[in-house]
Image (cartoon, rainbow, N blue to C red; front, top):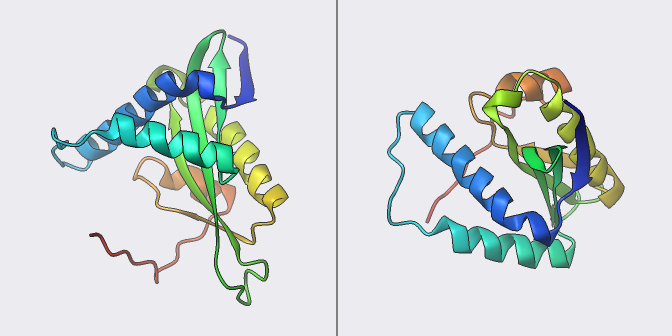
Length: 156
């Protein structure tokens, strides 16, 4: 098995969208939730990827075993007024970290994380945020991410 890594391009979007929906489904089910049947994630994801990749506000690295995508990562970029621990005001929002179940525990997720963290550093981010799944917490903790007890969200 020879795993290679490359930046996501528009030509891989169909498979990335499929993997993202698989990832979200796996997370929902593992948390005891029922996957909503009336949500059209496919077109929403396609719109997101196309717009944000073109704008330079989203980057993804993928892991390949030959022609098969076996791992994904994603980093969105945002900006807010600078503060003491992030003087650039630029933030990375980590998402879409997923490894095919047959390829887990091989270091693929760590390598993908290295790639997108490097992208955030190059973009000038001072902070990276993530909402981690239960499965991913150990990876992020071992990488150096810290819990922030003040994180809250508001859903519409």
